[in-house]
Amino acid sequence: MPCRATSIIPADSIAPATIPTEATMRTVRNRATLAPMADWQQLVDEFINEFDSLDMTPYHGRPKDAHTNLAHSQYVASLHVDSESGIPHLHIVVNRVDMDGHVNNDHKIRERGWMAADIINQRRRWKLPKDIRDRHRHQINDACKAALRELDKFTWEGYCDKMKSKGYSVMLRHDKQGKLVGYTVWMGNSHFKASELGVARNLTVTKIEHTWQKLHQHDGQRIGAPSGTGLKPDSQLSRPVSATPDATKPKSVVERYMERKAEQQRTAEPPRYIKDIPYKDENCHIDIPQAIHDLIDREVSVHPDNETATHEDVVKVAMLLFAGYIDAATSMSESSGGGGSAPDSGWGRDKDDDEEWARRCAQMATRMSTPKPKYGYKRGR
Picture 1 (spheres, rainbow, N blue to C red):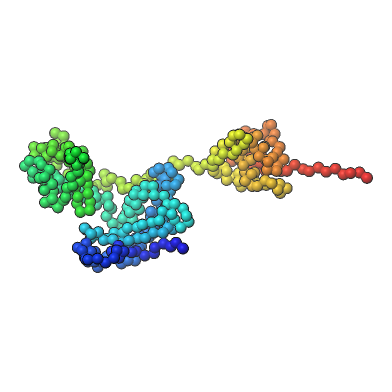
Picture 2: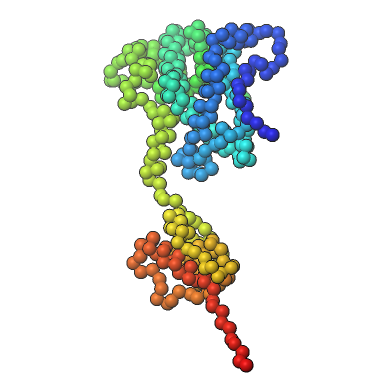
């Protein structure tokens, strides 16, 4: 019988023991600094509950994007300590099919993970990953500008060496012809493409040498600033995110998600009942508010002498009347054991609102489902 994992498995306990390596020793040393396993289990449950609660419908308008059901699925959580930084973190592996046999939708799974993590970070007053990444980007921007200023002549070898001396590594990317087309700067586990750094992509392969020239011609000016603008010290250009005023801080993923969800709820149209009812060689298209369908469903009834018709048959007759399909409603009432009598020629919608018209249609459908009376003849003596 399928079951769900109820505890966290340390990652280093999965593989068989081998010769101790530096990463293994660092993992063992960090064991003493890890939080209690009960806290990690609580974090797993909290993350899964937040992940399941996210509704992605406002983003894409697809009903199947509403919610996942990880809490009622098989999953394994593994506690892992990063070999480079020694930072503990969790890996969660979930079965695509939940315990009820339904498929968990993995559309936009990365965005769902970001949102769930942001909600937990804000609730626990932890640093948001976006804020940490922005701070790292500012630090790397400063290091790149400093490296360029220290170069008497721009060369890629000199640029990479200067960045390495500052604690960063630069990974150059070449195409099949050996031409340099891009590079990435690494800061621990964080990495940034050149297009993400600087101002107006001025640290990319095609623009970095021009940026080096401008730094040496106008040392101290903001990179890429137009002539005639005021000068600002570098310390002011790369302020930490925490010093940015709240009014100008970019909104987090969760804030944007909640705003869009609230906007959709304000502007969303009431749900509708849509169905095609076959009649002869065509379909009668029913498109009515769900509230009207529910009202009709409550108002109709099946005559006790009608042993053929069901409650749903009479509801269909009433909906056909509401939509104006008189002939189809008459034919359906006949096939369901009713008398088949069509409404009077003067019967129809006048100035009724939808609810009043729905009640009249429900009453008429109930009468049309009444069987014809049976007449008998007595034989004389």
